[in-house]
Length: 244
Image 1 (tube, one colour):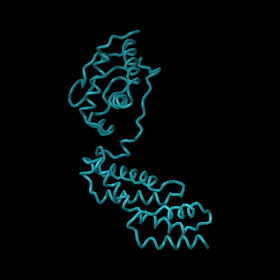
Image 2 (cartoon, rainbow, N blue to C red):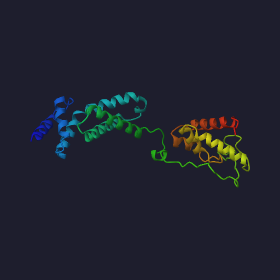
Image 3 (cartoon, one colour):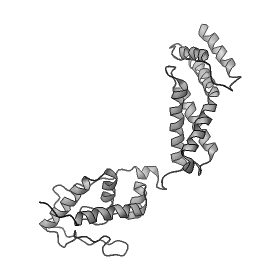
């Protein structure tokens, strides 16, 4: 019966939501939320009370978020950001168990919701997130049999060869196999971003399999970045003497 009286007192607090809850009120709420006998209806009343009193916190965090990300948020409707902030507050009140400081706890949810909203309303490129995250299988070069294969020069945008290098010969010889294997081993030692660009750009025989535009869309960068990374890796490799 004591719990019901405390809940009734909390319900009365909903008529005045201009300030955060006081320490004594939080003490009562924390005791209630940790009570295993608390009904779903009573829990819902408490969650609604907390939400009503902490709406100003969601607005404050949203305003701070727009100051930190001034450029990106300038292209986004601020009312929409407020809604994402309120959604984060709602999630915090739903998951709060009374064991932590609520304001600190809620800020984590609010900021996470704001970042999620900004990512949806201001993506890094127009390529759908499902496409960008799609796994691209990497072909292994170990024990790659090229005995009966011939190398065809690249046909890219009407040019006979996109990037000139000494990695082309017809047909493939044992020396060529060694060069290709050495090249891909060097690629595998690159940082993950550059490594992915090279694997998207060429197959094992160094034939172009994707355009710079498509790679830029998949990696979330510009075509110039792709061109620069590809060219730098190839130039560095072809100018480095092979060490057997």
